[in-house]
Length: 187
Image (cartoon, rainbow, N blue to C red; front, side, top):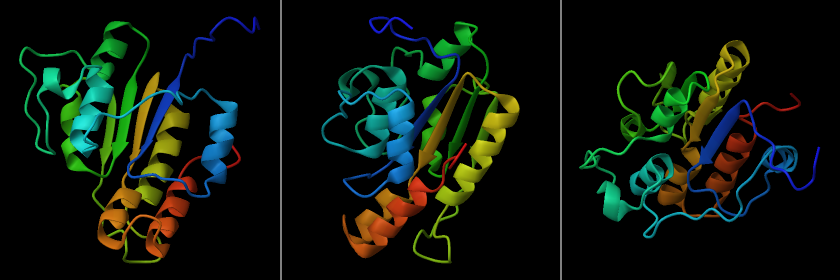
């Protein structure tokens, strides 16, 4: 491959680990080393989950899309989102896997070929915590079976635990470790 050319991926998995800070993440590090990353990408300020995700999916700042809190407000005029752009380009199917219900508004109804939402929180209860492990398991299975052109995988336990117990607390680090192990290890 020409080192000056940019490879075009036929399939993209967009992982978002909400609230992730510096912590040991060997699986994420491996995926970063083997895949494509956008280290220059920046969040919007202030860093509030839904405005950040809306800016990511709609490719416009909060001043344009109008989502300034974690409450959805339809952009006026409407803005085509990432899912709709992939569909319009004929690149193949799309899928989303998430544990936070407000993310459902990032795409228009019917735009996704597969969606999996399951709010399994409380992330501090049970042996496996919240929903990240289940989301990762379902996403890995569907991505292998259906091979969507774009898959969005949202893991939110670390953010929720950080708000409740503090960033870099022991429960937070365990939630980050679960998120790191929720993906396709060794595949």
